Image (cartoon, rainbow, N blue to C red; front, side, top):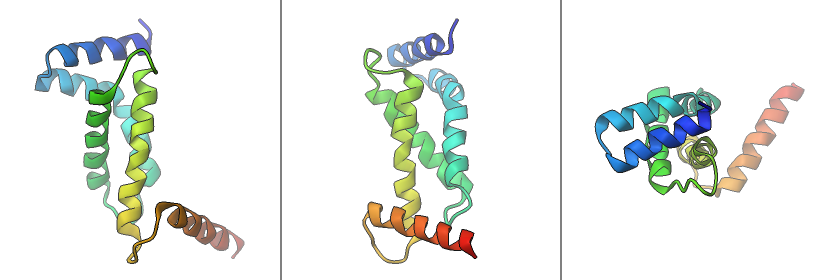
Length: 116
């Protein structure tokens, strides 16, 4: 059985019976995706456990909004986990800045550090 087929099978089981056991199995299936995004954003001003909790909340929201005919589950979860960056940006800067400016400022700081 391919991974995408197993994803849909587990998602269908959770959708039909949203029990804690089915949710735990589904979260376990997408855990590598969740950990990849948490690893990407860790090391800043937000602790890893906080990022993991936020990522799992986003994954749960992704399960609720998933439509099998539009994309694979792992693609949908990955796209929803992009919202994790917003949580990091919120706690990184003491001043409120739009997200696109925070991204540019971060890129600038990284380039400046590389050139030193």
